[in-house]
Length: 102
Image (cartoon, rainbow, N blue to C red):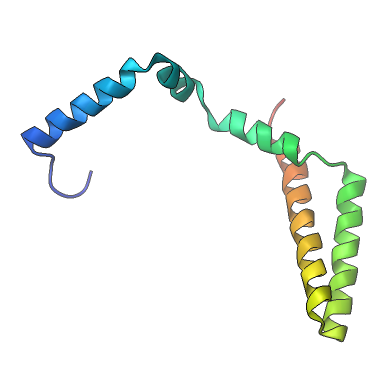
């Protein structure tokens, strides 16, 4: 830890806070078993799409980008932004499913 060390009183307060938190067995169990893997798997379930869906979203995004550049219209730009966001989420889900072992 960078910076000054905790004073004796601060260490006592911290120990009391930790003891209170440790006394909550439900919270302690949830925090000790929570891992990034579980959260990542939940994220992948939320954005589970097929490869053809990702290709479709990518094609729509590129088409809307082309139209948005030529038309210079706010609604078209907003629609492009929504499709682009959906495309990124779909691609992250596809890549994550391939990288994360099941």
